[in-house]
Image: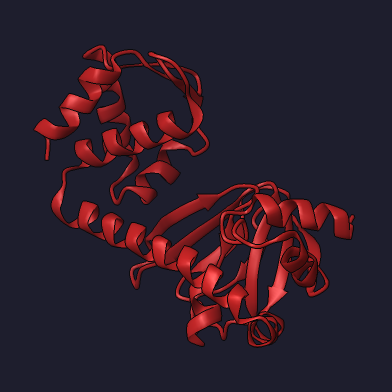
Length: 232
């Protein structure tokens, strides 16, 4: 069932991309949005297609991925509620640089490129706020590229675990639920499932983490952070 305007406004307020906007600006944007339900596995857009607009995850999760010439899939990100997708081609006018699909049954809010451009032309302050957020994301992507190019699988896995712990866990021994399978995690950090499983088991044997089903607890947070420095 499509989201009503009040629900969309609430979603936009908690989305990092639109968080800097005022309530009045959020209402202007709401008038130009539409929501749609996607079933698990359904494609939002394909790499190389002309960009028609950007998407915001209201519920469920979306997979952002690329497929190599050999057919190997690399998952760039799995985005949850509040996350926006495809900001860059909306602003640079290019095609979608990757594909996106629903990782599970999801509700997605869509803003067309044409409508967003018109809104930014009418209210330039909105454009400046959005570009500031997009610029921060570009910096994050540069960091990901550096990590994939210059670090080991163990380093990338530890870095991923620490990011999840910081965003989801609290206290001296933060814990979180794995939102991705070992296959999806392998795609995110640029390796294969077997190496993820092997390194997870090794970290657990060394006493850095504890894994119970899909629940991961960072048992030795200072030690894991120190380990990150030694494997660089």
